[in-house]
Length: 219
Image (cartoon, rainbow, N blue to C red; front, side, top):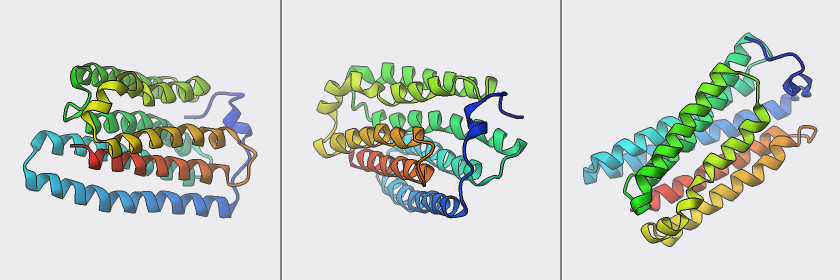
């Protein structure tokens, strides 16, 4: 599978070896930190015996490791048919990560009567975005960025109920993570900046850490 002709990614400058190494280190740190953090959180929940909460964190963990794992594989693979296949999984896993984060955050009913509606909308959007990435690879990429942001910010419609169902610290971490993702998009789009991809993925990892803190602190 190759990208469509005239796709902007085909004209993107190749990353230097230091950029690739730095990017790989960022991903490795995120994955190792995730292994430790999720292991501790799941062990803590298992001791309490909250099976629904445990399942929601497992879904969240699948999204986390899919996103960083496929991102690492895609970004480290030289241009080839395999790289463009990995690109599909890389982008699709972002939707899984977003939906998984919402699932972990809302599993306790933190958004009140909005909980089921918000979860339904997010998962429908995530599945739709995933089908788009596999069905039309390399197309509508700019629109996909906007869709990622809209899906990620969907929780703002339930900010009122969330502020009642979440402790203040959890809510602050949730908002900080969202703003960090949005801030990172600037570097994602700044293609000619040296270490642009490293900065972008650092923002993604930082936002993921902030959202993990929000989930860990939620009731």
